[in-house]
Image: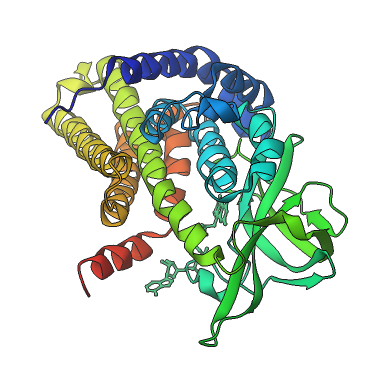
Length: 382
Ligand SMILES: Cc1cc2nc3c(=O)[nH]c(=O)nc-3n(C[C@H](O)[C@H](O)[C@H](O)COP(=O)(O)OP(=O)(O)OC[C@H]3O[C@@H](n4cnc5c(N)ncnc54)[C@H](O)[C@@H]3O)c2cc1C
């Protein structure tokens, strides 16, 4: 058993760490405050090959693996989560369904621009009326001649309304299964298709420099060939995408948790109270020691899930454990980092304020903590 990173993974981690410190940290607070999408950072991440990390070179990817993506997400989130979720959603939710389930033609059309970061794709599963219970999807798609006609709406879709968004994959009811349940399928809807409307961005608690919209489909017509994979496989497809995505979200959460340690350590050495740095007080030392402990154990959990996935072994339970643990740890560390910063921790100019606002969504997106517990319990045979 060897817990050390390979030379390639270590080099990637270092280059993303440098990029986050040098290119993201100086500008992200302003994007966050103004709720603007960081196009220049996305362009630079594209040049670095981050959008193509886990994909083969034949499709324009970097020939790396999913673990490489996770390491990049961890290092980005250590500095900023809006940038990290933009990459996570673009790769694991946006491009991955097309890579995993698309036809040769769909891959040739979409993957080169998605993997270079020139374009982004959204993953349209959640609806205003249903999230955790994705089987409750109401959006419908009916085949009319050689076109799908889509009606319905999607809620909270990341990367769906940027200037460079090329498409959204939409989960829709396309019929009824023999057992009476809904037949779900996934359909590619290119941006700008008539009948596809993107609402203005939400006003969010956190992730303020990331792009999130409600989408409406009103007699929206796309070619029959835009079906992604087999008809009726929509449920199985999004379960697979979300299982993987949970490892990526866990990595992002570990990054945020570690960023809280970084900022707290720095502040504890600088801030004076009662004649000495607050880091001299054991109460503060113990808080930081506990934060480091939590970030470390959450990292081991996502490394374990990623290793199983890459070995082709079952990883559903381990991915849910990693996501549940890492998101809990992120929220805990953000709360403690804010506490260590005292009143300054409540000021938006300090990164820990951003970490605090960005942490809560990690317990909600890509399956709530309750859903993770349901997955773990089910996998244990309950
Ligand atoms: C900023 C942001 C970005 C997002 N990006 C995307 C995206 O790109 N694509 C996408 O498809 N979705 C996206 N989502 C949606 C996200 O995945 C959902 O919000 C999440 O899955 C929860 O669904 P919900 O909001 O409908 O909550 P609900 O499912 O309504 O849950 C409400 C509460 O009930 C609990 N609950 C539900 N069922 C049970 C049960 N059986 N037992 C116990 N408790 C239960 C939940 O855990 C939760 O606490 C995003 C959300 C946000 C906020």
